[in-house]
Image (cartoon, rainbow, N blue to C red):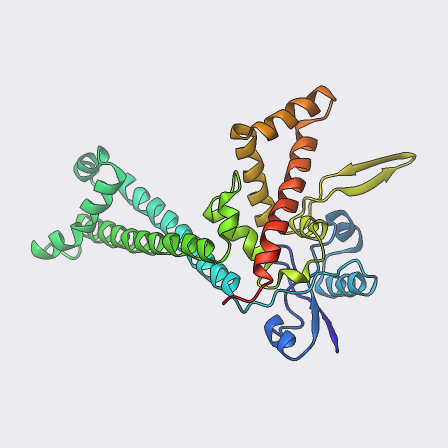
Amino acid sequence: MGQGVGYGAPGRSGRYRFLRGCPVRYLLAQGVDVFDVNRFDRADRRRRGKSDPLDAENAARAVLSGRARAQAKAGDGPVEIARMYKLAEDSAVKARTQAINQLRAVLIRADPQLREELAELGNAELFRTCAGLVDDSLNHDADEGAVLHATHVTLGLLARRIRQLSDEVQDLEGRLPRLVERHAPQLLEVVGIGPDTAVTLLITVGDNPERLGSGASFAALCGVSPVERSSGSRQYRRLNRGGDRQANAALHRIVQTRLRVDPRAQEYYERRSKEGKTRREMVRSLKRYAAREVFHLVRPVQSQPSS
């Protein structure tokens, strides 16, 4: 069986998921072993240079040396469905935010009388009122060359776009929790994990969690494993700045929630504070524990074929 190493510009997750443009799913279907390689140390990349050839060489060396052992995601199950829904949701949220900012920018330069009429409205009423401005302009047969007419049309189109995007976001926000409840309901029972956080972590694990050998490998993939460093005779650990940053942020949200509501996390924080540990060190340890907990919850369920 052949082997392939993921290569290409790293995305938000920090992993190299393609081999010279060949989709991972196709390579796996052809019996080729494909490995995920985390983003390399930034200091090393600055020292050696940042280019595709160097990244490809580093990725290959990581696999040949055994440092990169994580199999690539299969992308053929419910987690891939969640990834696509999440992609569409994030895109819709971003586009809606952009449209809202554009609508408010138009209002700033709008006719003073129109601006005063809309200034006191809440968001829902503002968008609803603006959405009807296009129809009002058409009904009054306004001058196409008038600035006020163009303002009405623009506000109306932006408001309708916001409404459409809001409907898309609402639809996707309903699909994702149902998907999690069906395929990984045990995650939602954990303190600090909601549907959005669960989806992010499931996407990181993938449809074939058996590709990750242990909770430690999952922690490294999430960028919450400690990194050994030395300076002269001083040996120390620092935070891992690599890995999947979205998963890292999800684990961070879990920890922050637990520090507010979970007595176990609060007791740990107080005990370690008395020992002289910094908040950063304690948060890193709690994120590492949360990663191990999530891994053991997801892997047994996901690795079994669904009935």
